[in-house]
Image (tube, one colour):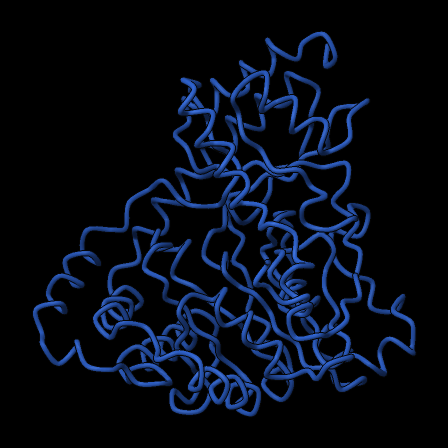
Length: 391
């Protein structure tokens, strides 16, 4: 007997869980695996943040049930960060909500805003959680293709009118996972104007907002005119401060959307450990030089990987944000064929583009989550083992 709902039974295995299974099996068999698949930073959480957490753990008051909306210290820190970084003012009581990582908040937002049968507009390719959360809420996903020739931005005008009438939510994500595409403020102005015209709320996933290079500074959708009337933005400390395992994030923006999400969350979770929230508040308010140091490391890795890929005939324009490279597969391969052959012949894990949606076919994603020398080694293995086909 199988104890499982039909809904859950229709969900394919989570991509990165499957990758981890293959990785574990290969390591067990003695293979030196280089994992460029999952976006989990190898850099450590800055020491001053860890020390603050250790201080907060000594306070017995932090061991009580946390606030459902997040402790005041953390919500105020997020509001202060938005005013410093973007010039956006937020009410920490109504326009900021603490999350157990932004993934949790994104997954819970969907059933907070849609009813069964409603449609959600989802970028393709994109972070798989948008689509899976919609499925679990008995909603319908409508793919907005992201194409190279359009800077991996959705073409809002191509969405059929009958789809727009049924749409109750739209996801956006810049800097993008997986495409590493970035946008300027004019894109968000267009997106917010479109959302107002069709009364479709926007959820902007801004997990990589601080991972940027050269002079590029990722904008916030909340800087767009009228954004707080129809949009929310999800943020995370996972990538900016290498705190993936801490599971701490936030959502900011439209107070009615945030209220709906908080109602659902208060019935299914009890919030993140207060000590972690207070350490996260300290991270947002303290010295930010660690971010520029980390970004410099990612940029050096990116240059090394792009140079290496070019030697095997794979050419990519340097991204301005995220720590991903979205690269076209060599001629003669599908995404899955290339990734499978690379894994089996070289022990290097990269992610097939079609795992992020049908429009990702023809690409593979590289995560810069290992030291530069390992990136050089990964490219050298690919060059040697697949040289017959790549040439």
